[in-house]
Image (tube, rainbow, N blue to C red):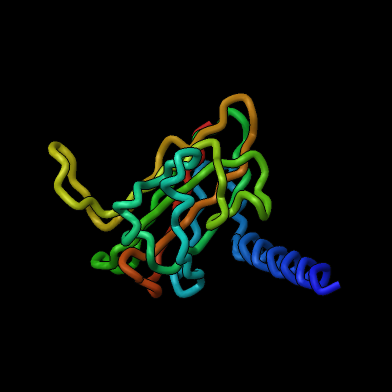
Length: 181
């Protein structure tokens, strides 16, 4: 009898944790004109202590050596990506000295089992963060950019994560999502 009660309690606790993951998503509806803009603040986000999903080989979003750049609060957005559509995502922090990071990943349908931090796999994940070293022929400023989020013949759903680097938990920003059909 004790085992059954513990099993039920554990199951309910796991369901509550998983539901909390999808309940933190803010849904965005893509503008038919091509650019959707959302303003936010990291203070609206949640801390994510387990980042191992990101360097899992079936996700491959960013390497474990860059984990510090994703240790602040995560604000998560979700959207529907129609077939034959490509997205460009730009993050513009209000404070040019604030260090933000950005990631976006595609899944078939968003559910409690494929939302970070319990993401086992995804179709594609891309990230941008402050470089450790200069890159020859390129410059980087305070903005972050994710490209190559696309759907060919099938529609997908996308989760976008706006994150503070090095534990940053407060800071305003504008997120711009450009739809290229």
